[in-house]
Image 1 (tube, rainbow, N blue to C red):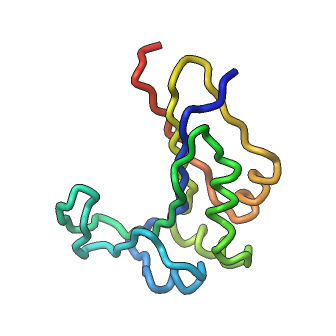
Image 2: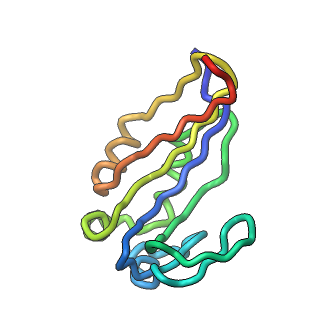
Image 3: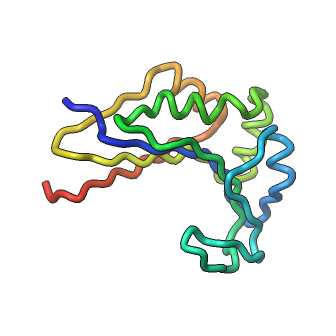
Length: 137
């Protein structure tokens, strides 16, 4: 099986009562994208919209070939290592590690190592996978 062509990863917290400064202080690093419910924010295409919910998001660069284990380690490294803080935020907000996977052909795959799964699980965060392909299989 060939490796996934490309991968992306980000960690985010979302919720109607999300306080960006509070999450930033507890995480110990600045988000790449953050906004609070009801406030204007700029979309990637430059348009401005009112946020329907709050979001705190931190990402790493895309990788080709896919490397979710490396990307998740890179996401977690600058953030607090205090698992109680992670579990507190995971209980208060919708917490996830988002992973985008792009396929170049049939039967590409990727694995998550036990160390990666343990690090994510101990933080009370779920992993979400979005898989993209331009091909009909």
